[in-house]
Length: 175
Image 1: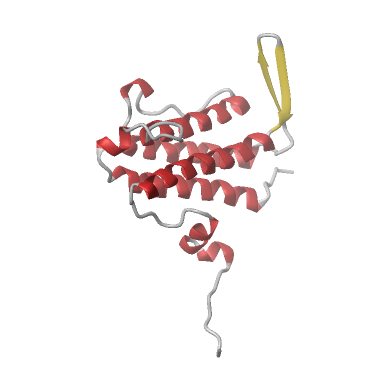
Image 2 (image 1 turned 180 degrees about the horizontal axis):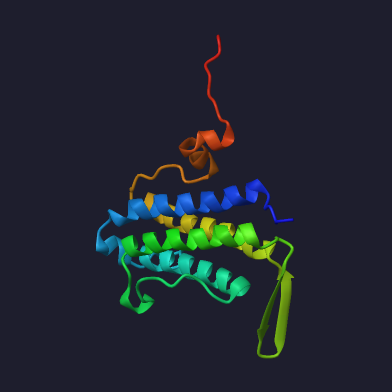
């Protein structure tokens, strides 16, 4: 019998991808000065924060598989947001594939100098979404403070973008 992940978990990964792409699409239009400026109270610059999100997703894949899709750039080259956006799509495909093939209760084993850590894959799957939300929140807070208009990037914004996935319908009543 093949493993079938719970549909809500898949939807969370699709939401994470959508939110990353939407925010990157907005940030690509910003000046280099805004993209590279250090953002007090957040991870770093917009560019550095997106790089951090993607590197974390790489680390999540490495923990399960020991490998990950290689980007068409090196991090030392300071890739553009457009390059990172394209790479995020590749990572998302790999993450969704992992979710389809790896049972959430599968053991993940890590080792270091004098320590081992065993846990279920569901911890990584949860981390993908939580980590993305946390850093996108940092970015949207700073962008809002700079007066940059942003769409809703929460699950309600996602539902508005894909109402068919939720069988969502709005109807006027006779009131």
